Amino acid sequence: MDSFGPKSSFGRVEGIALNQPALHQKACNLGLQILLQTFKVQYNAVRENILDKIFTRIGSSESKPITHILDLFSRVVKTSPQLLLNSDKKLTTIFDHLPTLPPKTAASLLDILQPILKFSRTLRDTLMLLLRKSMFSRHLNARKVSARGFLMILKQFRIVGSVPCSQMNQTFSLSQLSVDVHSQTKYNPVANSTLCLEIVRNLRRCLSQQAEIRVIIYSGLCDCLSKNSKLQKPILNLLLYQRKRPLVASSSKRSLNFLHPILILVITLSVYCSPQLIRLPK
Image (cartoon, rainbow, N blue to C red; front, side, top):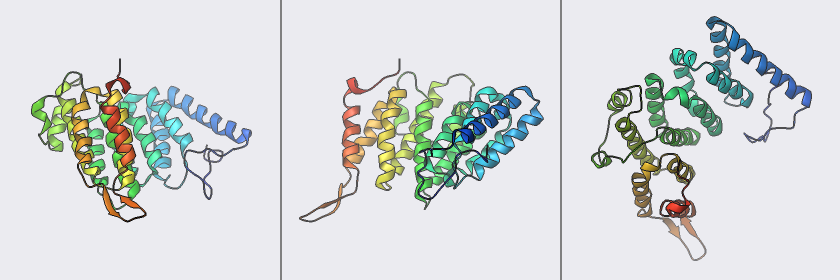
Protein backbone atom coordinates (compact mmCIF):
# COMPACT_ATOMS: atom_id res chain seq x y z
CA MET A 1 0.00 0.00 0.00
CA ASP A 2 2.85 2.39 0.76
CA SER A 3 4.48 1.65 -2.60
CA PHE A 4 1.34 2.03 -4.70
CA GLY A 5 -0.77 4.43 -2.64
CA PRO A 6 -1.29 8.14 -3.38
CA LYS A 7 1.92 10.15 -3.73
CA SER A 8 2.60 13.72 -2.70
CA SER A 9 4.14 16.05 -5.25
CA PHE A 10 5.01 19.72 -5.62
CA GLY A 11 1.87 21.82 -5.80
CA ARG A 12 -0.43 18.95 -4.89
CA VAL A 13 -3.63 19.98 -3.13
CA GLU A 14 -4.88 17.59 -0.47
CA GLY A 15 -8.09 15.83 -1.41
CA ILE A 16 -7.41 16.01 -5.16
CA ALA A 17 -6.36 12.57 -6.30
CA LEU A 18 -3.62 12.26 -8.87
CA ASN A 19 -4.28 10.21 -11.99
CA GLN A 20 -2.40 7.08 -11.12
CA PRO A 21 -1.85 4.09 -13.40
CA ALA A 22 -4.71 1.63 -13.04
CA LEU A 23 -2.29 -1.17 -12.15
CA HIS A 24 -0.84 0.79 -9.22
CA GLN A 25 -4.32 1.62 -7.92
CA LYS A 26 -5.37 -2.02 -8.13
CA ALA A 27 -2.24 -3.06 -6.25
CA CYS A 28 -3.03 -0.57 -3.48
CA ASN A 29 -6.63 -1.80 -3.26
CA LEU A 30 -5.45 -5.41 -3.15
CA GLY A 31 -3.15 -4.64 -0.24
CA LEU A 32 -6.04 -2.96 1.57
CA GLN A 33 -8.31 -5.97 1.07
CA ILE A 34 -5.63 -8.44 2.22
CA LEU A 35 -4.98 -6.48 5.42
CA LEU A 36 -8.69 -6.09 6.10
CA GLN A 37 -9.46 -9.79 5.63
CA THR A 38 -6.45 -10.71 7.77
CA PHE A 39 -7.72 -8.38 10.47
CA LYS A 40 -11.15 -10.06 10.40
CA VAL A 41 -9.99 -13.67 10.74
CA GLN A 42 -6.81 -13.51 12.83
CA TYR A 43 -6.26 -13.34 16.59
CA ASN A 44 -5.87 -10.16 18.62
CA ALA A 45 -2.06 -10.24 18.43
CA VAL A 46 -2.17 -9.98 14.63
CA ARG A 47 -4.92 -7.36 14.80
CA GLU A 48 -2.91 -5.24 17.21
CA ASN A 49 0.09 -5.47 14.90
CA ILE A 50 -2.02 -4.18 11.99
CA LEU A 51 -3.36 -1.38 14.19
CA ASP A 52 0.17 -0.42 15.21
CA LYS A 53 1.16 -0.12 11.55
CA ILE A 54 -1.90 2.02 10.81
CA PHE A 55 -1.19 4.31 13.79
CA THR A 56 2.45 4.63 12.73
CA ARG A 57 1.45 5.66 9.20
CA ILE A 58 -1.03 8.22 10.53
CA GLY A 59 1.46 9.65 13.01
CA SER A 60 4.12 10.12 10.32
CA SER A 61 1.81 11.51 7.64
CA GLU A 62 2.34 15.24 8.15
CA SER A 63 3.52 15.72 4.57
CA LYS A 64 2.12 12.62 2.85
CA PRO A 65 -1.42 11.81 1.67
CA ILE A 66 -2.89 8.89 3.60
CA THR A 67 -6.35 8.49 2.10
CA HIS A 68 -5.68 4.77 1.56
CA ILE A 69 -4.63 4.32 5.20
CA LEU A 70 -7.71 6.18 6.45
CA ASP A 71 -9.89 4.00 4.22
CA LEU A 72 -8.40 0.89 5.81
CA PHE A 73 -8.73 2.36 9.31
CA SER A 74 -12.40 3.21 8.70
CA ARG A 75 -13.15 -0.39 7.74
CA VAL A 76 -11.21 -1.69 10.73
CA VAL A 77 -13.25 0.49 13.10
CA LYS A 78 -16.49 -0.87 11.62
CA THR A 79 -15.20 -4.45 11.78
CA SER A 80 -13.99 -4.49 15.39
CA PRO A 81 -14.96 -1.41 17.42
CA GLN A 82 -14.46 -3.26 20.71
CA LEU A 83 -10.80 -3.87 19.94
CA LEU A 84 -10.37 -0.14 19.35
CA LEU A 85 -12.00 0.57 22.72
CA ASN A 86 -9.47 -1.75 24.33
CA SER A 87 -6.67 0.14 22.57
CA ASP A 88 -7.60 3.58 23.89
CA LYS A 89 -4.05 4.28 25.07
CA LYS A 90 -2.77 3.83 21.53
CA LEU A 91 -5.54 6.00 20.14
CA THR A 92 -4.73 8.82 22.54
CA THR A 93 -1.25 8.98 21.02
CA ILE A 94 -2.88 9.60 17.63
CA PHE A 95 -4.60 12.68 19.05
CA ASP A 96 -1.19 14.18 19.78
CA HIS A 97 -0.57 14.28 16.03
CA LEU A 98 -3.90 15.91 15.13
CA PRO A 99 -2.68 19.54 15.30
CA THR A 100 0.14 18.76 12.87
CA LEU A 101 -2.03 16.96 10.32
CA PRO A 102 -3.62 18.81 7.39
CA PRO A 103 -7.07 20.02 8.58
CA LYS A 104 -9.00 17.82 6.13
CA THR A 105 -7.01 14.73 7.12
CA ALA A 106 -7.59 15.47 10.82
CA ALA A 107 -11.32 15.96 10.17
CA SER A 108 -11.51 12.62 8.33
CA LEU A 109 -9.73 10.87 11.19
CA LEU A 110 -12.09 12.36 13.79
CA ASP A 111 -15.09 11.37 11.68
CA ILE A 112 -13.84 7.78 11.56
CA LEU A 113 -13.38 7.72 15.34
CA GLN A 114 -16.69 9.34 16.29
CA PRO A 115 -18.50 6.01 17.00
CA ILE A 116 -15.70 5.13 19.44
CA LEU A 117 -15.78 8.55 21.10
CA LYS A 118 -19.38 8.00 22.18
CA PHE A 119 -18.36 5.09 24.39
CA SER A 120 -14.85 5.92 25.56
CA ARG A 121 -14.47 8.39 28.41
CA THR A 122 -10.69 8.42 28.08
CA LEU A 123 -10.72 9.25 24.38
CA ARG A 124 -13.34 11.95 24.72
CA ASP A 125 -11.55 13.61 27.64
CA THR A 126 -8.26 13.51 25.76
CA LEU A 127 -9.81 14.95 22.62
CA MET A 128 -11.56 17.78 24.45
CA LEU A 129 -8.34 18.78 26.21
CA LEU A 130 -6.44 18.70 22.94
CA LEU A 131 -9.04 20.78 21.09
CA ARG A 132 -9.08 23.41 23.82
CA LYS A 133 -5.28 23.58 23.79
CA SER A 134 -5.10 23.72 19.98
CA MET A 135 -7.63 26.54 19.93
CA PHE A 136 -4.88 28.93 21.08
CA SER A 137 -2.00 27.44 19.13
CA ARG A 138 0.22 29.80 17.16
CA HIS A 139 -0.24 27.54 14.13
CA LEU A 140 -3.29 28.26 11.97
CA ASN A 141 -3.79 24.62 10.96
CA ALA A 142 -3.99 23.57 14.61
CA ARG A 143 -6.73 26.14 15.22
CA LYS A 144 -8.59 24.88 12.15
CA VAL A 145 -8.42 21.33 13.52
CA SER A 146 -9.77 22.60 16.85
CA ALA A 147 -12.75 24.33 15.23
CA ARG A 148 -13.60 21.31 13.06
CA GLY A 149 -13.26 18.96 16.03
CA PHE A 150 -15.66 20.97 18.19
CA LEU A 151 -18.18 21.11 15.34
CA MET A 152 -17.97 17.34 14.83
CA ILE A 153 -18.73 16.64 18.50
CA LEU A 154 -21.57 19.16 18.42
CA LYS A 155 -23.17 17.24 15.54
CA GLN A 156 -22.79 13.78 17.06
CA PHE A 157 -24.04 14.34 20.63
CA ARG A 158 -27.66 15.05 19.88
CA ILE A 159 -30.05 16.59 22.38
CA VAL A 160 -33.60 15.27 22.66
CA GLY A 161 -36.00 17.68 24.35
CA SER A 162 -35.34 21.28 25.26
CA VAL A 163 -32.07 22.64 26.61
CA PRO A 164 -32.58 23.49 30.30
CA CYS A 165 -32.58 27.27 30.76
CA SER A 166 -30.58 26.86 33.95
CA GLN A 167 -27.66 25.56 31.88
CA MET A 168 -27.58 28.40 29.38
CA ASN A 169 -25.37 30.68 31.46
CA GLN A 170 -23.45 28.10 33.46
CA THR A 171 -19.82 27.14 32.97
CA PHE A 172 -18.48 23.66 33.51
CA SER A 173 -15.09 22.17 34.20
CA LEU A 174 -13.88 19.29 32.06
CA SER A 175 -13.96 16.93 35.05
CA GLN A 176 -17.60 17.79 35.68
CA LEU A 177 -18.40 17.18 32.03
CA SER A 178 -16.73 13.77 32.20
CA VAL A 179 -18.80 12.71 35.19
CA ASP A 180 -22.02 13.92 33.58
CA VAL A 181 -21.44 12.47 30.13
CA HIS A 182 -20.41 9.07 31.41
CA SER A 183 -22.73 8.75 34.37
CA GLN A 184 -24.66 6.19 32.35
CA THR A 185 -23.97 4.20 29.21
CA LYS A 186 -27.37 4.90 27.69
CA TYR A 187 -28.46 8.22 26.27
CA ASN A 188 -28.18 10.96 28.87
CA PRO A 189 -30.02 14.14 27.76
CA VAL A 190 -28.67 16.32 30.57
CA ALA A 191 -25.09 15.22 29.95
CA ASN A 192 -25.37 15.80 26.20
CA SER A 193 -26.82 19.28 26.64
CA THR A 194 -24.07 20.12 29.16
CA LEU A 195 -21.36 18.99 26.77
CA CYS A 196 -22.89 20.78 23.76
CA LEU A 197 -23.32 24.08 25.62
CA GLU A 198 -19.71 23.94 26.77
CA ILE A 199 -18.62 23.44 23.15
CA VAL A 200 -20.73 26.42 22.05
CA ARG A 201 -18.82 28.52 24.61
CA ASN A 202 -15.52 27.24 23.23
CA LEU A 203 -16.65 28.13 19.71
CA ARG A 204 -17.37 31.66 20.89
CA ARG A 205 -13.71 31.93 21.90
CA CYS A 206 -12.69 30.57 18.50
CA LEU A 207 -14.68 33.36 16.84
CA SER A 208 -12.22 35.90 18.20
CA GLN A 209 -9.62 34.58 15.76
CA GLN A 210 -8.88 34.96 12.04
CA ALA A 211 -11.54 35.12 9.35
CA GLU A 212 -10.55 31.64 8.13
CA ILE A 213 -11.50 30.15 11.49
CA ARG A 214 -14.79 32.06 11.57
CA VAL A 215 -15.71 30.84 8.07
CA ILE A 216 -15.21 27.23 9.21
CA ILE A 217 -17.42 27.81 12.26
CA TYR A 218 -20.17 29.78 10.50
CA SER A 219 -20.41 27.18 7.73
CA GLY A 220 -20.25 24.24 10.12
CA LEU A 221 -22.94 25.55 12.48
CA CYS A 222 -25.59 25.16 9.76
CA ASP A 223 -24.78 21.47 9.49
CA CYS A 224 -24.75 21.17 13.30
CA LEU A 225 -28.27 22.54 13.51
CA SER A 226 -29.53 20.06 10.91
CA LYS A 227 -28.24 17.22 13.13
CA ASN A 228 -28.85 18.81 16.55
CA SER A 229 -31.87 21.09 16.16
CA LYS A 230 -32.35 21.72 19.89
CA LEU A 231 -29.24 23.90 19.88
CA GLN A 232 -30.94 26.53 17.75
CA LYS A 233 -31.33 29.09 20.55
CA PRO A 234 -27.78 29.00 22.02
CA ILE A 235 -26.22 28.98 18.54
CA LEU A 236 -28.42 31.84 17.37
CA ASN A 237 -27.38 33.84 20.44
CA LEU A 238 -23.76 33.12 19.54
CA LEU A 239 -24.24 34.44 15.99
CA LEU A 240 -26.17 37.51 17.11
CA TYR A 241 -23.36 38.34 19.50
CA GLN A 242 -20.97 38.33 16.54
CA ARG A 243 -23.25 40.77 14.72
CA LYS A 244 -22.67 43.31 17.50
CA ARG A 245 -18.90 43.22 17.17
CA PRO A 246 -17.00 45.80 15.06
CA LEU A 247 -17.09 44.75 11.40
CA VAL A 248 -14.58 47.16 9.87
CA ALA A 249 -10.93 47.50 10.87
CA SER A 250 -10.19 50.46 8.59
CA SER A 251 -11.70 52.21 5.61
CA SER A 252 -10.77 54.54 2.81
CA LYS A 253 -12.49 56.08 -0.16
CA ARG A 254 -11.54 53.08 -2.28
CA SER A 255 -11.98 50.08 0.02
CA LEU A 256 -13.07 48.71 3.38
CA ASN A 257 -11.00 46.33 5.46
CA PHE A 258 -13.51 43.94 7.04
CA LEU A 259 -12.75 42.05 10.24
CA HIS A 260 -15.45 39.43 9.62
CA PRO A 261 -16.57 37.25 6.70
CA ILE A 262 -19.81 39.25 6.63
CA LEU A 263 -21.44 37.39 3.74
CA ILE A 264 -21.01 34.01 5.45
CA LEU A 265 -22.34 35.42 8.73
CA VAL A 266 -25.41 36.93 7.03
CA ILE A 267 -26.16 33.69 5.16
CA THR A 268 -25.83 31.67 8.36
CA LEU A 269 -28.13 34.04 10.25
CA SER A 270 -30.70 33.87 7.45
CA VAL A 271 -30.72 30.08 7.67
CA TYR A 272 -31.23 30.15 11.43
CA CYS A 273 -33.99 32.73 11.17
CA SER A 274 -35.82 30.79 8.44
CA PRO A 275 -36.89 27.40 9.86
CA GLN A 276 -38.28 26.31 6.50
CA LEU A 277 -34.73 26.39 5.09
CA ILE A 278 -33.33 24.11 7.79
CA ARG A 279 -33.17 20.38 7.09
CA LEU A 280 -34.30 18.96 10.42
CA PRO A 281 -33.62 15.32 11.29
CA LYS A 282 -36.57 12.95 11.18
